[in-house]
Length: 115
Image (cartoon, rainbow, N blue to C red; front, top):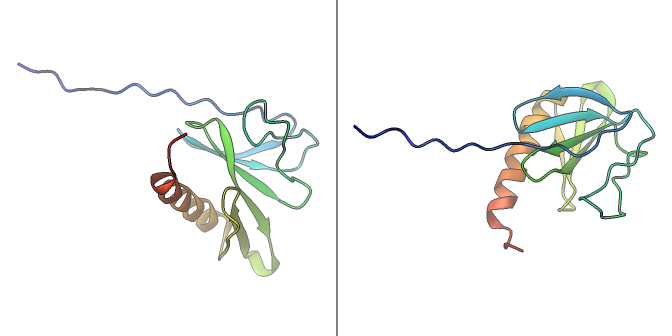
């Protein structure tokens, strides 16, 4: 009798410092950018996410890096932006933005060339 194949994947998030964790899933984390800690774009990058102009940052635990920023607008609307792409997308809520940006990030990772 054959046993089902299992893949063990561990997720590691970058340092979040004094920012508030708003939501955390198995692979992704939504961070409220309310602290002063500088979030690196990737490990040992010495380049940082501009948390002064963003209200939230989405982190990918598989890549151990931030991948999107979110800015709250009037009437509960949210503007989302992938860090690797200069396209801004408008969403009707924070939850829609979180889900939509995760889907966009997944799509972008599929078409990006390997390092």
